[in-house]
Image (tube, rainbow, N blue to C red; front, side, top):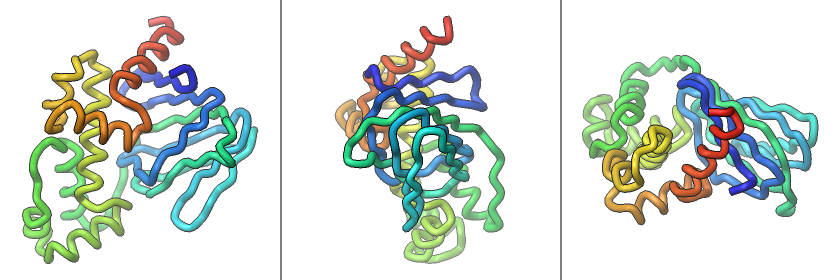
Amino acid sequence: MNDITYSKKNDEIECVHYNNSTRSYKPHTHAGHLTVGYVESGTVCIAIGQDNLICRAGDEFRIEPNVLHEVKTIENQPYSMLVLCIKTATDYNDKLLKELQNNILENPENMYLIEEMAKDAGISPYHMIRKFKHAFGLTPHQFQIQSKVRKAQKLLEEDKSILEVTYEAGFCDQSHLDRCFQKVLGMKPTEYKASLAKGREELGE
């Protein structure tokens, strides 16, 4: 885990430092967070929709909250970059959809079926899924899985055990946690804990 360090001084800003990394991330979003990045060396591709933003050393990029994006290497060549995830208020015209998103964010471990979401929003399940994905980049199910992983991250930051994190974040078992964590963050929970420890050491905590 020498290629990535997570640092977090408070609940407002998280810093992720990639050092000669070849990590790629599948399509995901950052709900309620503005993402700002600076490429220190190498080249990295930030894909947003159909657009591929090629960022080289010295380039900056910005990704608004709830925007679906992915991070890709260029011919698997290493890059170094600094990324800040900054908590920010988001506004959305559809109050019911925003409430649904908040319900999942606050309690991702709860079983919240599409039918219930649709009923709360006053639309059919089919239109519920379409509207949610259009607004937030992911289907409700994809967003719930991502939110479970985000909750697992917070619990790991509190130095809770993997077993505690597994069930408090709503995963069936540790292997389920590992699979989802790997899919969203590209690493296992144990690796994430190691990167947190490295970040704390660098901050002198």
